[in-house]
Image (cartoon, rainbow, N blue to C red; front, side):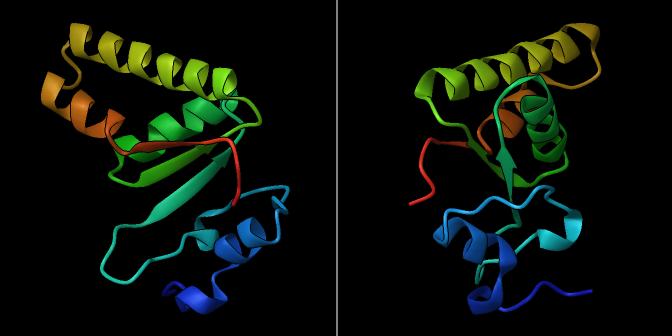
Length: 111
């Protein structure tokens, strides 16, 4: 199944209407013109940051959203600590960890 046209993207429409669906699914991924797939992650807590980590390690860009900067910062910190652990175990290289971490975009507003 191909992604919907950008004008009909359910993720962008929900973000513009400031409504977050109860569950983001792979079918809600949108492909911006000429850009990589972007997946929002609502909530930067343990589950949200874990979802974000999984997606960035698969090559997707993630918008990590929460209501406060401190929550988003903590979520990004959790992802970075987990990536460092994977580097120490030899599961991934430092370059892979850095590339994955760079695919997270913090957000505290849906504007």
